[in-house]
Image (cartoon, rainbow, N blue to C red; front, side):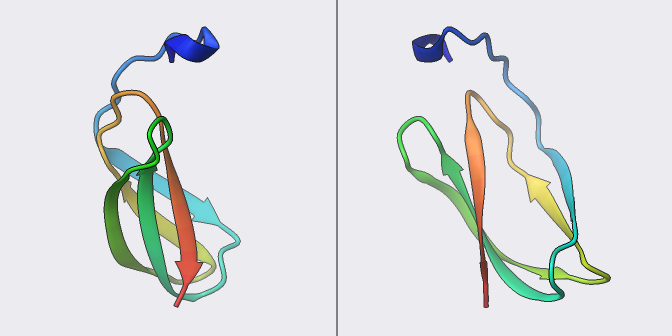
Length: 69
């Protein structure tokens, strides 16, 4: 992002696999890190200590906030 002098390019939607996540139900909230707006919120399930998330298309910068239900 230009404020931090970092070149960024759009990234298409994909998959993010997290290991070592306690089994159960989670709320995944995708956030635009530049303006703090919420992009998408969904319920996801982890199994075998693995959580698989479908990532949104990214224009500049995003983060996901996980909260156990």
